[in-house]
Image 1: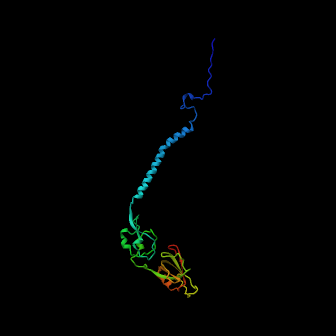
Image 2: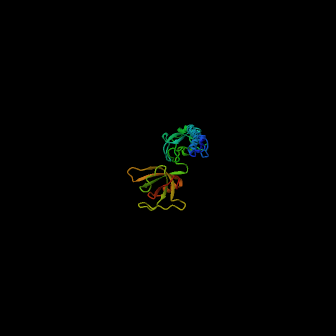
Image 3: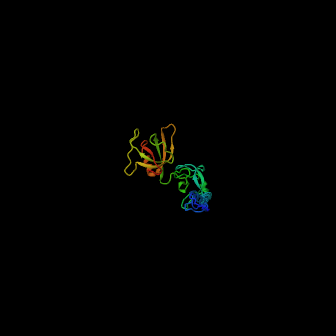
Length: 238
């Protein structure tokens, strides 16, 4: 008697499993495997990017430490106003890169600058130029000084030496003689620069000295006290 044994295929076993995990079964590789390979491939790029950052930082440090074509020149250690006689305390040395067309005062010329008069007002840190200092003559040619005797309310309390102002003719104020109005060829507003502000003791007035053109100074001097006011304007304004 013979017995026939029939072997049925294992349908529960996935196809291609006999080839191990590296044998393709027609399906895409696991996403985690792809991601892992991507991370491995991106490591050189990350290292290259970090290297570039370090190189750029090193170049910046070297450039900041390298003085290049910097020159020692004179700058103002504090704000100064027009008409001020420069002292050694007003000056400081700075190293800057200056174009050939820019006029500056070399630091070695500090002794020749001390004692000269400022021909304009400059703020602290500004570079000194030959045009900003005179040979001691003040006011400058074509300019004149005029003194304004003003009461409270006729000028802003913020006015100080170096302020740009407009001197305004205000006729007919109480307690003052009425002045003749300026002729048509004259202005009733004169641009000026304040050179000093003085409050005499035991007086209710403040004397403000201003620098302006010679013709304007003569016109202002002819106006009786009490008929002028000062308006503070932006630098160079009218």
